[in-house]
Each structure stands twice: as structure tokens, then as C-alpha cells.
Image: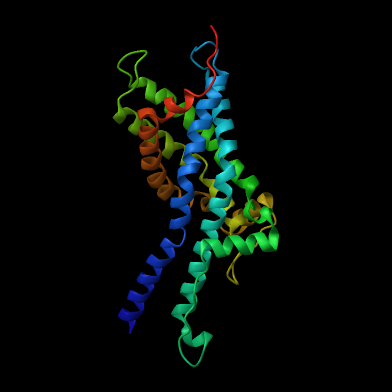
Length: 266
């Protein structure tokens, strides 16, 4: 009986992990494209006659890139969290079918991303998809402010010549280091954002009225270490993600996009 229950829990755990995969696969590409292209766009317009950007201007370009990407990031994160919550609650009901229906197990169907989107739009309008926008901005803008200047400077260290591009492996390693560093740095805000965007909660879970209320309740009930939950996993995921994204982007996508921008006269 115990072995059967354990295997059932493991299977449900795998199922829960796949609920947000489709949303991520659909929207993570435009999210990264917006972030990388916007950073290059702002760097292009903040540069003076092709001169090297100051650290402040690099951070300013990163701030603009982070602000632009939340257009896609906020709905993506919102739907992903709702799908994962739906899967978690469905798993709990499947583990205790007799408590739900004495007559036998009841099949519980989890909602799809399209169904959740329609429900949110019907009940709360477009604002429903952008719940947690403030917390997402607080996470993604500092992330980009840290990531892009750090990546640019690490990447420049690996250049063989002053004018030539860095080897692809240098861009990959630079993206990994910069991505994991920025991810750990903003992890506390990611914890807050996730709590705020979780609409469906268990009976013992707290509800939050805003960012300040969320911070206060987490500190009171769980302590400061709660803000570092998932930091290690985020670093492991973000590092290769941004390493690969930077390699692909710097193989030619960035130059292709920049070719459409008007060239400045000397």
C-alpha cells in the first residue's frame, strides 16, 4: 500500500512539473528576444559616436530592457503559477479520492492555459493577467541592471582583439555567470512575486494584499531565510538559459536587428 502510494505521489509530482511547461515554451522566446533586443536598442541610443558606454549608461540600458520585457513576462508568470497551483490542488484531491467522493475516485481535470486565460479575462479583465506587475518590475528591472553590464564586461575580457567579437564559449560562460549572479540577487523579489500571483491557496496558506504586506507576513511567519527559497534552483536554470541565449543572439541576431536602426552621422 505504501509503495503504491509513493509511486502515485511521484507520478503526480511529475505531472505538476509539466503544467507550466507549455506556457514557458510559448512565451520564453519572445521574452528573451524583447530583453536582448531592447538592451541593444537602448545601448545604441545611449552611446556617443560609438564610444564605450559608461557603467551608469549600461545600467540605464539594462533598466530599459527589463521594463520592456514585463509586457510578456507578467502574463507568462501569472499563467504558469496558476497552472502549477491547479496541478498541485488536483494532485491533492487525487491522493484522497475517498474524502472527495465516498463512492469512489473522481477524475479531476486540470484547466488548460487557454481556459485559465479566458477565465481571468472574463472575471478580471486584462488586469487579471497583469496581477503582480509591480513585483515583476521590482524583480526584472534590477535583474537586467545587474545582468547586462556584468555580461558586457565579462564578455569584453575574453575578446582576443579590441574590435573583434568574443569567442562563442566566452559569451556562453559570461552569460552563465552574469545570469546566475543576477538571479540570486533578485531571488527575494521573485519569492514575493510568486506569492502575490498565486490566486488559489490552501486553507493554511497566507493571503497578501500587496508587496509590503507580503514582506511583513513572510518575515513574521517564516523568517528572513524564506526569501532565499529556490535561489539555488533559479541559478541552475537561469545560468544555461542566458548562456545559450547570448551565444545564439551574438551569432548574428543582434547585428541583424541593429541593421534596421538608423545609422548616426559622425
